[in-house]
Image (cartoon, rainbow, N blue to C red; front, side, top):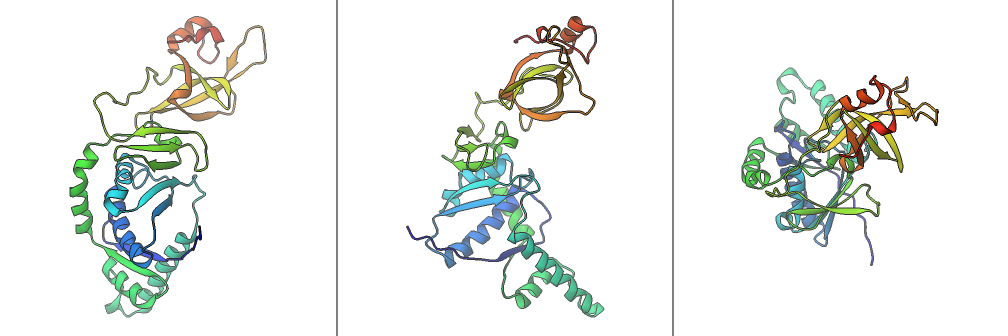
Length: 292
């Protein structure tokens, strides 16, 4: 199959300040219409973005992704770039647009400043011919949000959202997810709410102790924070003292913390059980942790 690569520099300017899935949807609608006109042979869209929870990595954007083919007539999948690793050509385009607009506004008389998003759109469209500009009004975003409310209300948070970096629609209610974009391991998750699919955290409370699987090894830790949105736990690891007879574990001087997904929590017990075993919270032995 012959693969041909095209470059399309496009920027959306809007007077809507709401960074939501509805805003993203309206931006997609405008950009994909242009893309399909310029390249009618396009069949699939690969999205690469950061993991911003308000705009991209949330249940509303995922349920929209499940309907991508029905809404836009194109297959799609979404890949999330690791934190602080997402710089690309789009950042350069955005910087060029903002820098050029600022310079032009400062050079103009007081009576002709670029003060509104609409002014910015008109200026950029007339002067920056290498970039295609689109304007999305606040009213159009509000209308889209109204139309999508039923879809949004039927969605629910995907368990372990934080850990997955690749989402591929399988149907209008489910997606195939991967830990990494090129990872072989995959699973099917549902984004549509169902009475028998209520997402609840296990009986793990902040201040309790757990045994968890990390890097194929069992570690003991204390639960510091639990997330009902991402269904995971922030834990503070304990390290062995080195005494093989007592199997004692203590907190290191330098805190060792990490988010652990629910399925990697192997054993759990409350603080009270630990106190009975050792008499002090920072020290405990393996026998203090029992299977629930």
